Length: 393
Ligand code: CMC
Figure (cartoon, rainbow, N blue to C red):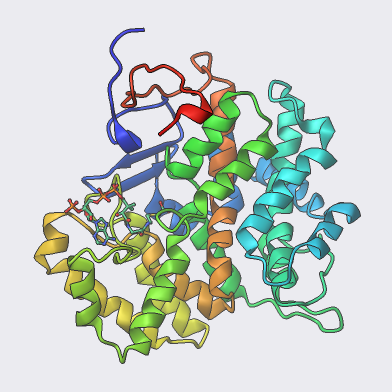
């Protein structure tokens, strides 16, 4: 009852209180549990940040070791789940494969589905953190027709992921520490972003008391869209198209500004940031460095920088406060690492996982939580009488 307020896209409606991530969009500030993203990017690591987001505090050295070991022990997939990958078509996009496999985890781990049993939630948390990289690597291997390797739990989580993604059974895979470091940094930057589309999805599904695997699986689907996580691969497609048009950046920008249907400057703009996305600033700074280190300086980076330069001085973008977001430069780094464009959003999902888990757990422990059930403003016909089939004009 009461007055229903219309707020399409929830631009002005808070769905929850949260103590996990703070964003000041006008100032371009992002903090996890109070720690500035710049400090975490420089000094922390993905698993440490995962711990911070999920449990609320930075771990002690012992806590981090125990957490890391627990996660590393759970990377193996059940043989029957591994066989799922045979069933998908060869050219299946890895995002729905990722989401389907996560969904299937609820059939394999029925001992960790109760959202109100702390031990079970803990177990499903560790299982997800450990198995999502394996699932992601298998989705990739499947799409290129190569055999699936078993995880090697002597390796760190990301080292293992790179080996599972790029290694071959009969060869030693040499892990490049620069690549591990870059991936770790990108995952730290993606780890949480308060109530974005996928996180809100995870919460909404979980608010009906669906289990963690089901909620995260839904979140992965939400992330896949080009306005959300799918933007990182859309940026690369856009840069590719521009390169194919003899680098005609100006024609492309005119189409964007004329609002041609479906044409946006991908990787630009954000619902909350009306200033430079602090994550994009860090990625931009490191993109050059990382591409240099990996020996893959990319002409598409030049196109991206030219686009940014134009946009930052163009009235269309300036007046709408459109700045590069996190997705603008990440794809170039993923590409340099050897991932195909289709995998970029999967990598985003790997990075965002601890945020989804932390937000889902926060919601389950919040006494204010109710089932998510938005209202509507009805605009249809008020009432009319049914007309029999033979009498309809
Ligand atoms: N290129 C051209 N025009 C744009 C863009 C863009 N990338 N983004 C927004 N605009 C325009 C939009 O047309 C509108 O113009 P007007 O006021 O004349 O109608 C104005 O700017 C406001 O845009 P909006 O669509 O109302 O803003 P929103 O908050 O609903 O959308 C957004 C935010 C991120 C979906 C949007 O900026 C966008 O589509 N960006 C491109 C896709 C992208 O990079 N997404 C990744 C977001 S960051 C990571 C993540 O969340 O996954």
